[in-house]
Image (tube, rainbow, N blue to C red):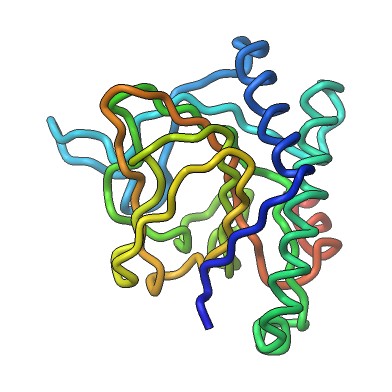
Length: 212
C-alpha cells in the first residue's frame, strides 16, 4: 500500500483559503524559515537548506485569539485526515507505542517566494532536542494552499512528485524511507501549512511540554 496519502474535500479547501488570508494579514508573525537537524546546517558560504518565510502556530496558545482559532481548526482538519489514514492502514496504529498517534499542536505556515524552497533532500525525523519532540515523529503532513504547477514535493526513493494543489492534504512517513524536498518554481509563490504526527498520547506530550 502507498504510504503517501492524499485527502481533498471542501473543508480542506476552506482551510487553505484561511491560511492564505491569514498569511497576508499577519505580517507581524512572519519570520525567516528555519530547518532543524543536520539538514538545516550549511557550511560557510553554502546555500541554506531551506529559504522561506514562516509563521509558527501553537494550537494550545490562546494569547493571540486569531492565530489560536486558525491553529485549532487546522489541527482538527489534520486530525480527521490522520484518523482516515489509520483506518486505511490499521497496522500503523497497532505498531506504535501506546497504539496512539496525535497531530502535534505546534506547526508552521510557510511561504516560498519564486526561487525559494526546501531545496535539500531531508526527512522529518531527527534527534534534535526541541519542543515538537522530533524523535517521536512517525508521520508528516502538508496542506497545499495554492495551485503551483511544478512546485510540489519530490520523494526520492519513490521517484514521485506530489503536485501542489489547492486544498490537498498529504500525509506521509516522517523517516528516511520518505526522503523528500520541495520542487522550486522560479516564477510563482507557494504557500503551505505543515507539521508532524507523533507517536504516543497527546495528553502525555502536553504534560511533558508543561514541565519543560
